[in-house]
Length: 179
Image (cartoon, rainbow, N blue to C red; front, side):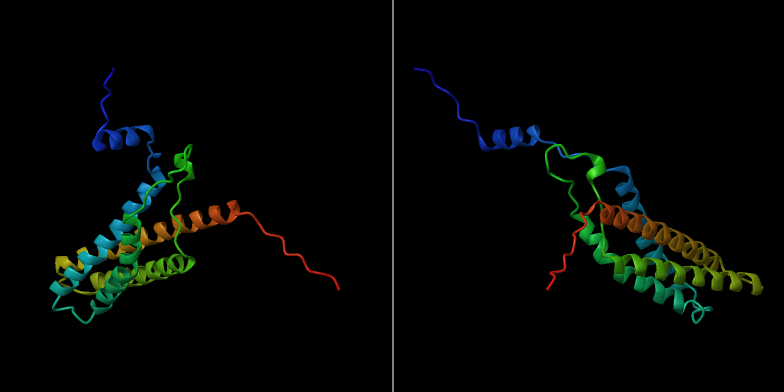
């Protein structure tokens, strides 16, 4: 009589994990994650910088408002993507992985990047026309330019993902019943 050892639960889980490895997260999605985190960082840091500018507080209230708006609409997108998992279909490749958001998010990203660019232009105007400018104004100008750029590039990447998904979707033919 031979005795066989029954595998433990941990051994079964380890064997199951070893049998299938999902494809790695593709580089373009990693870059979009970095852009999203950068936009959130620039917005949050700009709020702190705007608070320290007590002398120019009225000028930089709009920058704080844009920062809060950016955080309000990007936070759910960021939290939703934290749960991103690659396709678990066997044979899925890195190219099969996409990160698609709604068209409204893309439109808001473009609009917010334009608002950041306008805030950067206002900060540049303050820098050029004021005699003694505190260093926080320069920091705020840099943050506004970086936030505008990162949001614009991120929206462009999302727009590209939407276009790829629309091209890959099968087109349904509408038939009209004749009388």
